[in-house]
Length: 87
Length: 417
Ligand SMILES: Cc1cc2nc3c(=O)[nH]c(=O)nc-3n(C[C@H](O)[C@H](O)[C@H](O)COP(=O)(O)OP(=O)(O)OC[C@H]3O[C@@H](n4cnc5c(N)ncnc54)[C@H](O)[C@@H]3O)c2cc1C
Ligand SMILES: [Zn+2]
Image 1 (tube, rainbow over the protein chains, first blue to last red):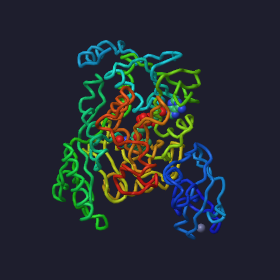
Image 2: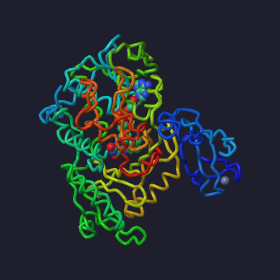
Image 3: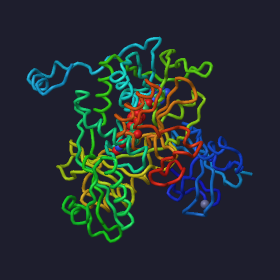
């Protein structure tokens, strides 16, 4: 699997640390309540097919990257800086 | 058909022509009391114990592929009761006791081999953690022995005792731990359930769950609709998709775990051995193949196959620990879909929908749990009450934060357990 870092270009998967689903970018307000926090911390869409997840270019530029990916074929469909995905 | 030494002998002399299929291949009925979604180890053992202990036989197990095609036929077969936290420890202890009587109970040779498990440690800190875990195992009534370096050298002389980077300090020895033949466990439970009247329906994918007024009414399948009073979701790595049919989101992320086997060798590794530095574990099958594995690939996946970086990582760890295996040729590798939960512990519970039950979150430890999980889940489905050895596997522990059971203190990231 190779992942294209928006800064560094196409790199070996080993340079990246995997965090989990990109829902991690949607942090609720501290007082949003049990349900919102359950959704954020624990519950997952966990799709068999296209997904968006969060990777960290640990062995490269240190950017957090949202990777659009297929969980069945392992095809990488696209990448975007997390800072841009969030705004 | 019953198995016995005499029967094996007789069949051997008469050309093995008297063996019959181990279970029927029935057409699905239009209605059952209980439907179990998923014919893996957990679904089959649930059906078996429903029939055997609760007399409930109007039960169907619906399997989208074939019996034994999921993780039950893909795992590295380790059976143990060396958990630390209350909630887990009494459950795995219960499961190991069921394993110890399983072959007689099922009249089936599952090749359960209590060859002992040795978890190696490589620092003072790891030794303290191993001693603490061992004490918890003993206080649960199970067995644990702390081995020093010299005792270890006698038992496992082939380890790399000269490794300066990962020095061997000793190991935590769990003599009642071991392995079993994974396929035989699926087949034995399938046969036992079938003999008691349970319908095992293969090539039958559940594609919808019918819910009316907050209660489950049945399922839609690729072989037509089937009504049921109770439905149990036991789909392991596919739990997320199955629960979505009931409008539920689960605290589960599915990941790929790989395993490897070498060509058959003469007996050389007598125990199950785990490396404490870098993730690597190994045992030798009765056919002689070295069966080993390591970490997840670490990204969410349903591919049931992994990538090469993990292969390299596992091989490196193995050869660092026991250089002798560097000469063995790897024959096959494969992957399975793991239902990773946020605290590394499973979920065995009711849901907010009447009559709908959930069993998932087995991470990479669900094989040893197969008898225990079916036993306690059958109890929950039949009586509506939690089994005394499975009171803490509650779905709401994540939402409320009460009762989260994170054995290794890794935090809520699914792939870290
Ligand atoms: C490489 C590897 C090594 C492992 N090593 C160990 C080990 O050493 N020790 C240990 O304790 N555990 C181990 N495990 C974990 C263990 O194998 C699993 O936790 C356990 O098998 C999961 O439960 P199961 O047997 O019910 O799952 P499965 O066998 O996967 O059963 C789930 C079934 O549900 C079916 N299904 C899914 N969706 C549907 C649907 N919509 N309709 C109908 N049917 C459906 C699937 O086809 C599948 O057959 C390992 C796993 C892997 C992959
Ligand atoms: Zn980069």
